[in-house]
Image (cartoon, rainbow, N blue to C red; front, side, top):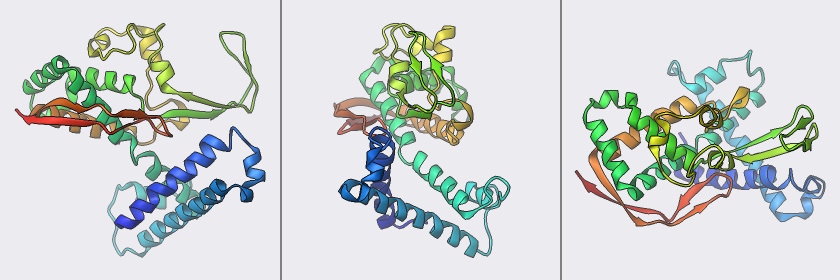
Length: 277
């Protein structure tokens, strides 16, 4: 288990590493050649070493345990020598899971609750829908599904970064050469007016009869072999927390705050008022 100090250092190290190696170095490759002359780069390299040391510590502590819990993610990784034959590969997988799941689910929940607070009629509809079924079956609520889809469509927290494996010709006849680094924020796709009518509005009802284009455009957890490995857990957390909060509290806006698009999209300074119902 990580101490509070380790959690704090972990968060700061992630921000340094992701800012340098995901946002800056791919755009300005010379940074990798002149790294030691750039203070930010040096701090990011030190942070990467710190994260690697953390993964080694996690693996060492796991191996020192006399008994372990069956079915846990760390046990599956540590015992999957076929998929992860070396400690470097096991450590990279552990860090990937820690980094990917650190804030994204919490930010998604926050955005959905903010949208419900801004739209009291939609909040009331959701509460009434949930009141008609038992809590253990909340995840089956179609109304809840529509609310969560719409919240994640309006405020997707992640972005996709991929290197093209072949030359790609866009619909506008523009060539993207093989080996190009492509960065696409889901926000551009999820608010495309050619796909979603009134794209900036929070309208869960749009998912009652979605078009084929809407369904093919909405993939908040990405697609393919590099999609979100923790999406099932994330969905379960979002469904459970949003349903529980809305069934017990009436939410209203206190302060809207701002939306920060650094690395992951997140609300900053937002404050909600909650009244027990």
